[in-house]
Image (cartoon, rainbow, N blue to C red; front, side, top):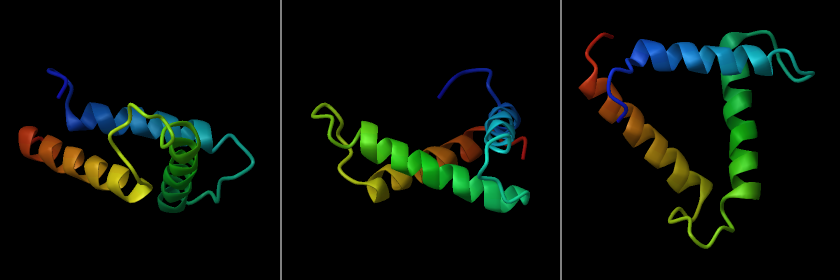
Length: 82
């Protein structure tokens, strides 16, 4: 975990990414849906650019998402500002 970075900071960075995504031709205009669409697009990118990398220990999108969920849970425990 990065010291001195709060979950609020992480959420603000994510919001900037969603807002950039919303400037494309793809957004629905509903924050929840746009977040899911962006995550889905990131999964496509990850599959295309990272899954075939022999140095990558992650072998599937599902495993990558599980690791992301675990990181999220650890950061929530670490930062009780929420």
